[in-house]
Image (cartoon, rainbow over all chains, first blue to last red; front, side, top):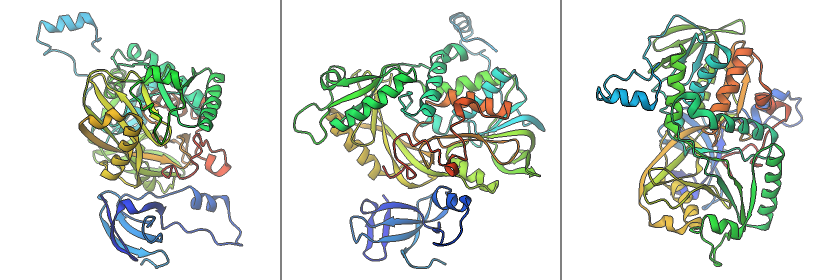
Length: 89
Length: 418
């Protein structure tokens, strides 16, 4: 069982959350000329890192907020959690 | 190579089975190979076998970080089927079914292929319509499919929940009678033994740490046991695809996720077929030892852990108990997990890459085991001829750019969300 520290609600079990994928992916800016490659990178291509991975989760059975979680994909250790709009250094 | 036969079995009995040849050797890596296959799983071993058998390329090495057959080919639920709607998947898998039927003879190794049939249960009229459509598509591609009504399903699996008071009543199902199961380890060992006998070097405990690429062309690989030159390199590493892709500066439409399976204690024969729940993701069959073999959803988040987490197992087994209530009486014997190369449309990739001499085989999602022979056969063709075969032409890497996705189950880009 993973325990995720929701920045809004505190420590909760993973049962309350749903996963939202890689949080380091940035949506291309609107009104900018884009190549197919850039869209591909946004929509499909993922690094899927082994080790420290920044990812989105939604506290779906809690405050329903999206949050960012820094987690190790090999050990499942969670290092830190952030609000969705918080900048991650 | 010593043939496995009743005569050799009797002959070796006189020496207490102490003098059998080793099934495969343990060679030290040579300096150079024509083809290096990275990944000694089912697909990698099959690729090497078909390179030797179909294309007469025997200066081949399989490079495996751990031991052969220790990854997903040893961790799956052994289901073999070709019940796909789309042509790309259907024709590819049905070609594989033919290879499965001949495999034990072909490899001189009993892979215990058991075509016991698979039944996908339907729980609504809409789902019955969808199954009728898929069944018709299958039959147009020469794959056997039978649409069963509720009574027919009840006759085959009376132990499923047919009471009136259930959340997901069984309306019927789609059956592929020629689908089935096989002994997963035997598949890996059978391919390994034959490949080895034809001159393929199976190199275990050898980790790939880098690639030697110059002027857009692959020249070799760097491993924990030294550098190896190679004219061609094939990647067959399932859940580790992204790790190796990073060393090649490639980003792929693949994420690595965790998939669990489990078996119950062994019980007397109760279930003849493979059965899948239609209102969620759960499947079950009974092994020859009597264990109920079960699996279902991904754990749901990127993972390289190769071991699962309880909430998902609980969720999956809840579906199982909804489908077949007697399962709740069984004790769990073992659970385990493997790491899946989940592609963004749920279909695999077998293709060339932008690097000359580098070939990619990945994205098998939930369905890697049954694809083992067809994947190896087409990947060997792609490597040997330096062009894709028509069977794997749809499994291209650039389909994500061109929009030719093969979204068999309509799961779209987030295969783990279903």
